Image (cartoon, rainbow, N blue to C red; front, top):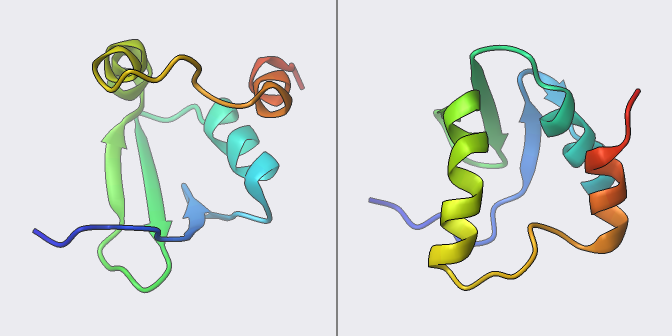
Amino acid sequence: CRVLGYSVVTHVNGAAVRNLAHLVELLRDAKGEFLVIDLAGRSPPLVFRREETLKATDEILSDEGIRKQCSDDLEKIWHARK
């Protein structure tokens, strides 16, 4: 198993990621069954069932002792509507 370390996310579901705020928008707006995440210099992509990922978020945050899912500025983007 290769440790991912600090890999750069290049694409989400085929859309090129421009910056961190755009990544949050792509994840927020994803509609399909899967999230396909491409990382720079890594093949094949990471593939997650989108709904399972959303459901697991609170458990992961709790298990890892993380108080917030993201910073306040990114949280505003996550909760914004198109």
